[in-house]
Image: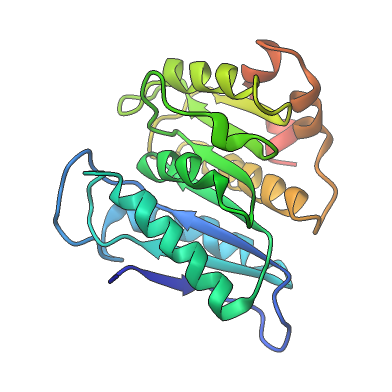
Length: 232
């Protein structure tokens, strides 16, 4: 398989104790090769660089074989990446961070034994997508209210159904931002960092995420992303 997993700025001299695997967006159908020059891949680079500041955390970005979802090609590539990471680094806990199509791939691949949680950013979800694979996992979804590419109503519906198989679910609404996550980029980055480091026990899970998880539906699934929380 021609997919590649690239560690980003991993701290030298220490064996990693956890992994953040970043999955980029794409198209519904395309067999064009995915490259690191694609904007969808490049949008995940700032998240990778920020996470790579954490000692002991291996940060990897997956470049898919194809730009399209096609027949779940990004899910197959994600499973390959997880197997490859285990082969090269041993059994390490993993958090998947996916944007758009990458969020959908992360949700589908959440049943991998190494995956502890999924951070799905503006995820592409379809009605009736499976949620059983999330049993025992943590799930954070974030969606902008100016979204034009993926439907926030569907990610909310997904979160409601996921809550039936795992209690560890929260969903944030990023007011004033859209699919590219650029208007409030600092807060998106802080959200990802807080969830990944909290779930992998590098830092305590911030109270504003833990509180959202404890809130019953629908309050914990429609939490405004606040300046005080995500930018703190």
